[in-house]
Image 1: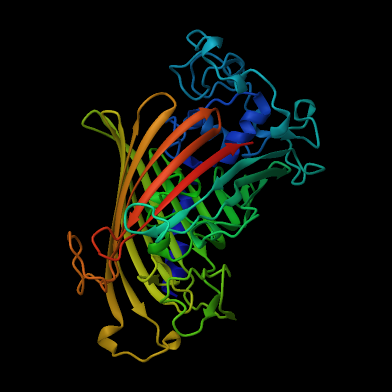
Image 2: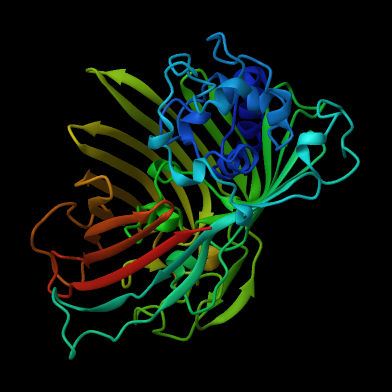
Length: 507
């Protein structure tokens, strides 16, 4: 009842402010590129080049007029940024229609544009109808007579993790590696009339994956905007998708082996549910209700303790047992970019409440054989200092063991545990095509029992830390090669390490 009340209050809040709202996804950038054959950047619709922050006037116009491929036609003759040039005039000239300081008179020279800005990429666009010839683009017919244009794209991600003990690979204590091939963020978008956008994102597995990535698979959802039952500008996402918490709402976690805390923290990555989101001035809000874990994996004694990854969606071992989750997870997140000390600093706050899989301190994964009741609050920030792009997150909360899922009864006073986690990330561009990243995170599942920071831990302490780095070479537009090295539990004599070469190519 408490969650339903909170959800209703937040829904009312969203409805009141929806007139100023907008929602964005990388898929919409693909729509823009498919329509105008210009890669542009996230700042076509956002105020920053990396996106994830408040939309500019063109971004707001995109949502308020339907948020699908035919929307671009409806807003072409509008001057969104009030600089004296229509949106289409700016796009043709390769200036930014949401930035009043960018006009056709001061646009970059063609020599500075990327190759994809000048040429039509047939692999990126498949169209059922010619949007250019749609006469009734501003019509109100719900179905629009047929499904709208289909945009297709994604990224091929190839990795070969090699894991072992201690710091340096050795044939006696390191494995030979396993090649992982999957399609990361495979995107298919289409539209139904002027009000509904349908997006699918899928990881297509062609070889076994670890649960850190496999839990991402199966994103498909619809985004509804402009319906008569919704206030102008409101957006509602329904389906299966990645729910946002903390720094994960801004990071490139799906394509980066240097993971953040989201899975240790929440217990899963993607799930079914629905979500309200948008922006109010410089502030972004996200409110979502997930279905939550609906099954447990009954495993033989000792399976979890051995460090075998037996992810909740079946990546190895155990017997699947359907359950009814009586406390579906609730997510709430707000963030904004503020000017401070002459810098633009991104700040975010998150809340999570619901039943989920607990953290497994034996292997740093989750334990899918039981559920705990989790409450979380988190603060995150991201900003630029000199040439460094810095990000940090702090999470604190409480885990409560649920009696119905306990295999062995425990005293009431031992059912609750205070948890805490920290995440630090730094990125430094060395050249235009080369950058280096460093990451450190630490997760303490019981702050009253274990110390948070120390240089020397006992092997049986349940605190889990990861120290890692990556060198990335962007050798072509939409393609990079990356070499990752990271060490788990560097403070323990039982530490482990991994080397992960990665190749990612967008299509």
